Amino acid sequence: MLRTTVFVGGLAAALIAAGSAASGYFVGKGILDQRLANRSVTVKGVAEQEMTADLATYPLRVTVTAGDIAEAEKRLSDQIGQIVTFLRGYGFDEAEIVAQRLEVQDLFAQAYRPPNVDLKGRFILAQTVMLRSTKVALVTKLSQSAGELVRRGIVLSSEAGGPNYIVTAERLNALKPDLIRRATAAAKTAADEFAAASDSEVGGIRNANQGVIAILARDEGAGAEGQSPDKRIRAVTTVEYLLVR
Image (cartoon, rainbow, N blue to C red):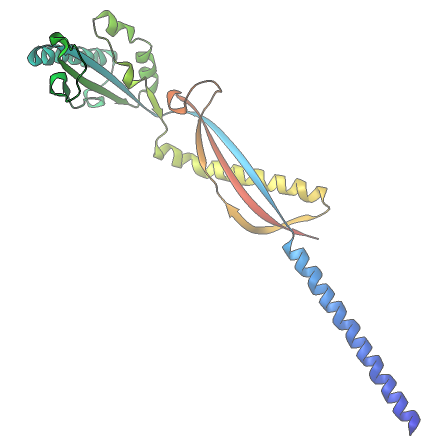
């Protein structure tokens, strides 16, 4: 009877030990699986596309001064008319040329007017002719020929600056799908290279961020992006991939 009791007790101990070992195995495997599930790599993919702006705006601003407002208005109107005629002759349509509002400044009406104001310069009138055209190359050529207006006695104000070159939303939206596809493919390549170096394999995507689409001047030193008709469109995607094995 005593032997039976010892045997049963020994068997129970063995079963308990086996159960503990199995439990430890599964717990350990669960931790390992959890660690493997948490292994990931975050990579960025970049794609670029060169293009030319499809819209250009060019403000041509004129300022005149006179002691008589009627005289100032006449001089300004004459110069604005010459600018419009010049643009039409250059090949731009009437719909592409808009004369913006007239600005009038009376120095004598200012509470803190400059001292010793010359009566001949009492009134300052200014107006901007805005050229907005899809003829981008022609706008660039025009900006290089602005000296012709000077020879006609028209001095353009430097406040307005030169042409501004724009990539429209329609053109950008047409480029985005291919840019994002190529950027994502570049990210996958980077993830594969990392996985190979770490003796792993790339699994599914855990998280992804399209990032931003940036419009840059194509060439370094070309000035601000808006001043260059030649653009470089850049897409950046950030993707987190799971690593398996």
